[in-house]
Structures are given as C-alpha cells and as structure tokens.
Amino acid sequence: MRHCASVLLLGGLLVMIPMPAQGQSGLQYGLTLGVNRATLESPAALGSRWSFVGGGVVRTPSYGPLALQSELLLSQEGAEVGADDGGAIEYGAGYLELPLLVHLTAPPVQSVSAYGEAGGFGAVKLFERQTPGTGNLNIPIPSDATFFDRFNAGIVLGIGATISIGERKFNLAVRRKWGLVDVTQNVENQPFSDLGAEFPTRGRTRTWSAFLRLGL
Image (cartoon, rainbow, N blue to C red):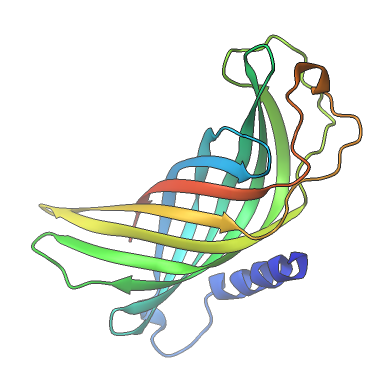
C-alpha cells in the first residue's frame, strides 16, 4: 500500500500540471478551505480531533456532467487518546495529500446544483504535533517523538452543492475518507505510557471533512 500511495502522489502531480491540449480553456481552478474531524480505526478506543484542511483544486470537464478532479491539500489527521486519570493527548500529523476524483454534477434544481465525488488519495507526511487534549493535561510534550508513518493512501467519497444567491455562488462539500494503510509506527518507549495514553500499535485514518470551495 505504500507503493500505491507513491503512485497516487505522482499521478496527482501530473494531473495538476496543465498540459497544452484541445479544450484547455475548460480547466477550472479553485481553492478549498475546511475542517477535518479525524480519528484512527484501531483496536483501542480512540476519540477524534478537529483540525484544518485546505489547498488547491483543478477540475477538467470530461463528458457531459462528468469531470476529473485533482487536489493538492494540507490535511491534518490523528486521534485523541484518553488518559487513565482524565484528560487526553491529541496525536496529530500533517499530510500533503493528493486526491484524484471523478466529479459528477446533477441537473440543477432552481438555484442549487448538487454533485458527488469519488476516488482515491495518496499522502506524504510533512510534520507531527502532539498536544494536550480534553482536560488540558499540564505535561511536557516531546518534540522529537514520531508516531505516524510517512505515507498514507485510501479512498474518498463526497457530496456537495453549488448554491446561487443573486450573482454569488457558494460551493459547499462534505467528504468521508477511509485510509487503507496502517499509519502507526512501532514506538518502543511511549512518552505518555505512565498516563495510560499510549499511541496505538495499529491504526488507519478515518476522517470527515467539510469544505468551502472558492472559484468553482
């Protein structure tokens, strides 16, 4: 699956680069800003964490209501792990993510045009951050700890709508991502083991996202 993530990343970069071709004027560009509610699917009971997601979108009309869409996003993943005596630790990682999607637009109904999206994503880790979560544990956070694997990959499903109000258009979307790769690393000396807030030994990302898109 790590090779799959690398292939998706390379493919996404190629799609994001405009190539001289017939119908080039049909390319659509935009920005997307939103929030993630991320957690990990794991044998351990984990909570979720809220974080930022945003980046650029390129959409290429294909046939009728179908279009191909590639994105370049900074997406923050992770989970919240509860401590034995209350409080929690939020384990987070920021990934450079490249979703490759098929975009299907439904016929408009009055001022609303709904759409659906489906495809896959590949991602490479840029940074990690651990912070006190619920309960505001007053403990030192190690700066050199590494819990997340370098690569991630998975599938994406989403729905959204473009709403026209006067001359303005608002593009809103909701998305669900299922990571197919175990993104956890084997950490022998867990820094929060004395609190009972150890990072799980297995886990795949599970993320809800809500977006506002600009320019599409």
